[in-house]
Length: 130
Image (cartoon, rainbow, N blue to C red; front, top):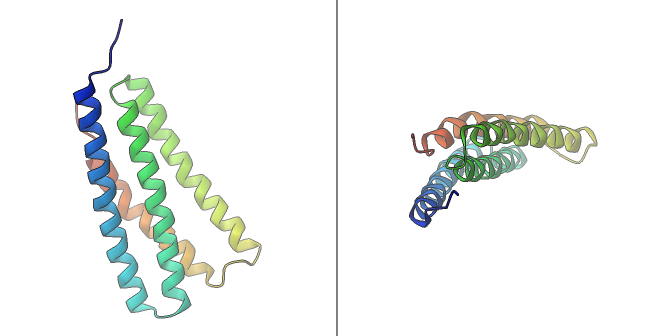
């Protein structure tokens, strides 16, 4: 019978929290730079896209850290699930823009795309190697 080592769970949770905070600081710095470069609505839309990318990255990291001690199959399911979350969010943002609800579509989608490209490698650095 398998058991869960509470110290491993604590270490994974601490690593996940540390990674989420670091990625949040990185995304906030990029959002501040975007608002500095493009004042007004474009900068705000890019910052919103970066925020959505950070949420996707944080959710994916939590899934990876939870699945890693279970099995390699669970890890890969979490990996592909995280990519699915990103694609789903992109599709949702595109529908949101298509309905005419977003004022600055290129900045919103560009901010999201930049955020995913920026945070994806950061996220995978936080997963401990076996």
